[in-house]
Length: 528
Ligand SMILES: Cc1cc2nc3c(=O)[nH]c(=O)nc-3n(C[C@H](O)[C@H](O)[C@H](O)COP(=O)(O)OP(=O)(O)OC[C@H]3O[C@@H](n4cnc5c(N)ncnc54)[C@H](O)[C@@H]3O)c2cc1C
Image (cartoon, rainbow, N blue to C red; front, side, top):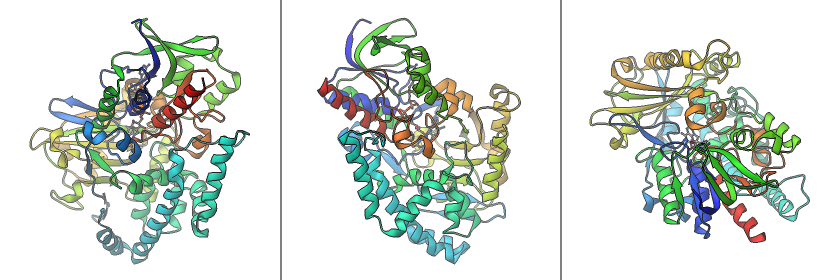
């Protein structure tokens, strides 16, 4: 391969594709190289068993930036989001908590458990919306470096300061509390019912190696809440055809803009000359020249593997070493002959069309974390399940279903044994946990795919199996992501940029890192 490009993008996950699309729309000649046989990275649909199509990793969407949907005209490229209605939490005592998108119904349901909580739910919703509005513009913003004297950084800092000043007093306090408290401590301020707090706190721990009582998890609540007010459909949903359909729509928009995309093209090295990136070398030895290289893979792969510490400043390497991955999640994808029957609400019904959350109490959630802290996967994990085939029948044969089970905790580093030996045991634990609530599950399973953090690392290039290319904790967000001083998509290597989830504003099917990075690259191009 002897062509020369303006930009070569490492990785065809959704952020790499967004990045490429924006560069090509600005007239650049762009090549995307993806290691796997299929596009999408962690936003991918694969027919794992004949006739059963799984959103293998990510399974629901809401954070995808509306401006990206609009600017890339994704609906024309096949993007269709179907509603995910609510969260059903079965309880061990045979009761349940079932929150739906219909506010009045949810309020009545919460009131069945606690009248006080039903009232607080409205207040909480309002407060979260205010805070999400405060944080929202930050998503598409270049994170200002507070140590810099550049006018652009000061302008952005001042912008944030002004926005904070404009918040009503209560929202100011709430915002500070969100940044510092644990999810449960924060929720304790509003609610009394254990099952409600446990289920709500779950979104505070997704993708982190923290428990619902660990300080800092309250902010992650907000990160996941954001889509509920800001996603194109203002709620979490399924992409028709699975999350891979989102990546394919972005890929189609990118191709239309002129991007060349090659799969099964694994990059071994980033080529350097005089401290500048000048292209990439594939595993098969092919060299591709480019004016700039944009990496959507995580910092460990980008710098340690593809550049080498010897080519990087020492300080930067120290910061890279401190960046925490600490994968804590696994995924079990089930091909089912029928629908699970929950003891708490027997028979088929609308409760199966939304998320089904195994989060019966705060202590349950915290115990699940305790085990992970000491190097074991949770014997009774938190599980977030969805059955997309109920909403989108195209993903399973007639009468059959796919069920996606996101599981926490599955620590990357096990104290005893290794994940290759423990994979089946982990899968059995997940099934046993579900069976406590839906005993018929075992009889329904036609096949299962069990993904451990090691599988996420090996198959999807997620170091230590972290689902967000690095934990979404406060010390690794905004102007600290991925490392202090390098949060503006540039790197210490000239003409090398980062554009994946390891950059601001982080993980999730959002596209914001890819777009923000492209805007930065185009600005730099003009200056050159
Ligand atoms: C199990 C799981 C569940 C999740 N659930 C959700 C969810 O429900 N909703 C949500 O919003 N988010 C979810 N996420 C997070 C979300 O999927 C990711 O944050 C997002 O998809 C990452 O996109 P990306 O483009 O930044 O990176 P990636 O998707 O990681 O893309 C990077 C790409 O680079 C490729 N690559 C790696 N090495 C090389 C190489 N050497 N050469 C060439 N290419 C290479 C990879 O194959 C991959 O395609 C989940 C993630 C996981 C793993």
